[in-house]
Structures are given as C-alpha cells and as structure tokens.
Image (cartoon, rainbow, N blue to C red; front, side, top):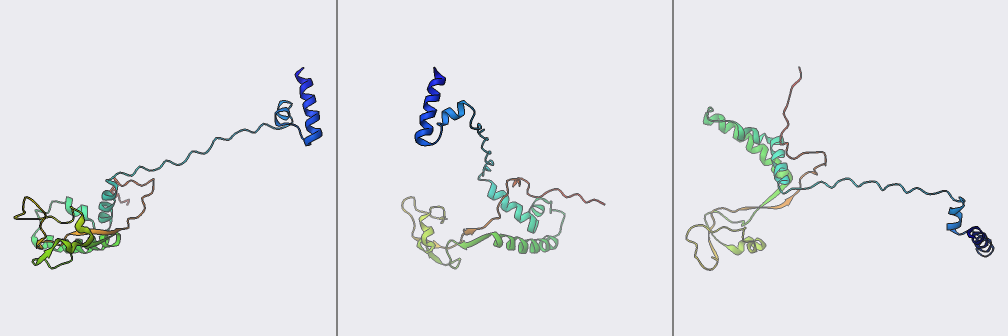
Length: 180
C-alpha cells in the first residue's frame, strides 16, 4: 500500500509543483546521497603564559647583546679594567636592543635630589605601584611629596616580535655547534 501512496503523491506532486518530493526522490534513488565532509579542525590556539614576554625579552637581549653570557660567566678572574670594557659594549648593545622593542619613560620626569610631589607622576600617580616612599613614611595618610631619589621607569609602549606557534620562548639561546 506504501508504493501506491508514493505513486499517488508523486503524480500530484509533479502535476502541481513540477517536481518530486525530496523524500520520494531519495527513497527511490533519484538523487545521489550527499556525504557530509568532516569540518576541518581549527589550528590549536597557542597558550600564552605570563612568563612568555619576560623570556622573550631575555632571549632578545641575549641575541643582540649576549647579556645572559655575561651574567652567567664567572668574572672573578678578570681585572676591573677587563670587566669595565666588557660592560661598556654590553651596555651599548643592550640599550639599543631594549629601545628597539620597549619605549621607556620616567614615572616622574624630575631632577633627582630635588623636592618632587607625587602628582608629578601625572596619571600614573593613581597607581599605587608607581611611587615608592622611602625613609620616615607616616603610618597614616599618603605623603604629598619628598626628595626624588629615583625617577622610576614605566613602559609606555611594548612592541615585541610575534611569537610563532612553532617557536619556543623557553630557548633563550640555542647551543651552537660549528662544523669543520
């Protein structure tokens, strides 16, 4: 009886709409079954850890100024003149490398050793970490100012190179093997 109903339905479907219903066409093999392709898996999103930026900066300072090599070397056997000569080069190269990726500005742009008010830090004065009080600090209330001992630094902009998914910021400097 089902075939009779399908024939009746097909006749009137073709007569009034000009086509077979999708169910009848599929049942009797008049359409090719469409296989659903699995959706491509999205590339895994790299997990960024809070230490990644610090390690990236260390790697950049090593690559451009050999900072880690200097810090990890035992310098007790060198004379002050030898250490001073090495530090002069290191200072220049590390300063250039840091300036290339980070723009540093003083927290308080004043003359060290003179009186300065906390409001001289501008918008940074609202940040409790921007100004550190030394000496005879009152137990209650916040001091309005004092002698500026250090200008402080804040990063006004950071422009580190993009870390590719295949890169590891854990490797600060690769081992180097020379082939002869």
